[in-house]
Amino acid sequence: MAPLIWKDPGMPASPSTARAINDRLALRLLQQQGPLTAGQLKQLTGLSRPSVADLVERLTEAGLIGVVGESGEQRRGPNARVYGIVADRAHLAALDVRTEGVAVVVSDLLGSVLAEASVPIGDETDTGPAVEQAVALVERTAKEAGAERLHTIGIGAPGLIDPATGELRNSSGLPEWHRRLAAALQERLPARVLVENETNLAALAEQRDGAARDRDTFVLMWFGHGIGAAVVLDGVLRRGASGGTGEIGFLPVPGTDGLPSATGCDGGFHSLAGAAAITELAARHGVVAPAEPHEPHAAALVREAVARLAVDAGEPLASGFLDALADRVAIGAASVIAVLDPGCVVLAGEIGRAGGEALAARVRERLGRMSPLPVEVRAGALGGGAVLRGALLMARDGAQDELFAPPAR
Image 1 (tube, rainbow, N blue to C red):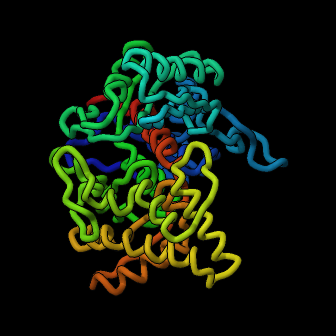
Image 2: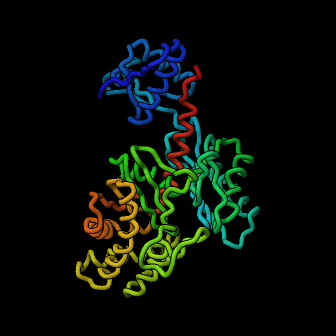
Image 3: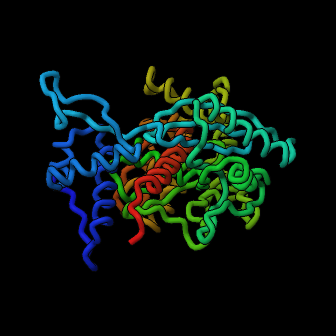
């Protein structure tokens, strides 16, 4: 690996700023590659031995790194010590906010989960009590994790994020407590609170840890309780002028009974490929399965069809259902591909993961006939857990950016 050297095309950095930059570089390497010796840090950074010794001393005194072992049983001395980030330097929380409840995890600075919990919040619950339930859940889970103070909280929620303010916009059909939760957490807990659209966070998780690890340009299509998409182009998440990029549920498509409106997506792609539409399609093809907790029934139906085909590839009911579902998914995907040419589409969410390669292959074959643009179609690897994982990654990135940041010049 080539040495990583900080370069500034402007004025030369002051000694203090250069030291801060080197410290941050070392911390990023320890985050990405795990514990390292001083010799390995020297090799990876290209810094001199005295400079590495100085930065190790500074970071140790600051409580950011510590000795976690030695390199080789026979070696002794400072150069053999293995240094790692002090994971409990900061504690983080991540929330997946759904219309039916909230799930939360609390982790250390490296993202290791220390505690997790969830609570249902019914449609009949008033805004104030709903917010209180969610905040109390975070407080209880943090206490269970042994976190006296949360440094950063990441929230994934349905709805649009205002590009100017970073706040969840008022969207019709979503509970009011969704919008008030971030402010309530900020008021009650001395923590930094970050909010992002749930599908965008799923894309972050699938890119870091899932099906899109090798892609910097792709579209994630989310099929779960809701339907949506996230667009990543050249490694950058694209939100659009109003934060509405990816609202594919409103996409006008053939095969529905009408057209969507500004206040509802009935008649749009949602009417073809939303969870309720998939459940109805399964019933029409004679596919049945018991509902599973914490996921749309449509996911269990798709998983049942895939399981039947694994036993008998020619099973007509399961094959007919997945073929019809692939027809519907391909209609929405083809429109996205024609506009963005992403080269890769990830079928994510509980339903996308349940369909696996069986559904992805069917959609891929149909897109090959419908579009002149080459595209890979992959099944999401993280299912419904992608939102919570993405919220935790966002919180971790935010905390590390603050803790590892060099001082202003």
